[in-house]
Length: 205
Image (tube, rainbow, N blue to C red; front, side):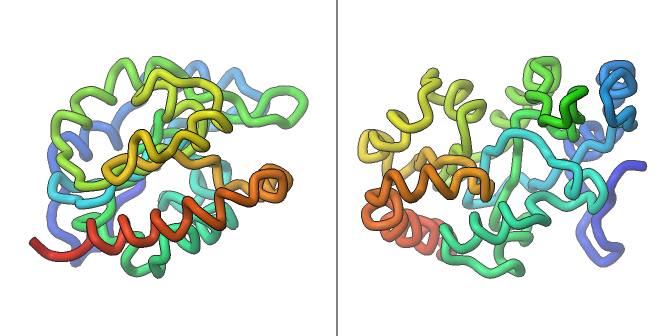
């Protein structure tokens, strides 16, 4: 069933409500190895100051209805220098992946890519609604759509070209621990600047 905010939250923007009711990929998901139903995880409000663009919810997020409720989320919050309360405050942080639903696994148990239909349907209306001070592009799918660049290592290494308004990042998955070891400049040079940019963007006007 669709995820819903806690009862004491303000009403959702109509676009959020529409996304949460989306079932365009029902047949696609039913044909995957997981055979799951759509559960769009839309987590944003129009005045959010920081925009996080990820890939697609994983299986744990599909179950929880809340983005980044996994070890990847722990690592991303550490990179940003924020606690969970700040991270999940939708008036401050918008989390808009390239696909709002868990795409499922293939027959080998690997993550399927975000269905292009989701971005084709929803992405531009969401981008027209949001006016973030800072955008974090997490992973190759986000960087390809927003920057037209597909090589994650090269794009992240060229982060100076986009900062301070945009920071391209590798996916915070623990599968990328080897990448972080091979690229120590990421933690030494980029992350301190990212933390400063996040702190500045979250300051009240």
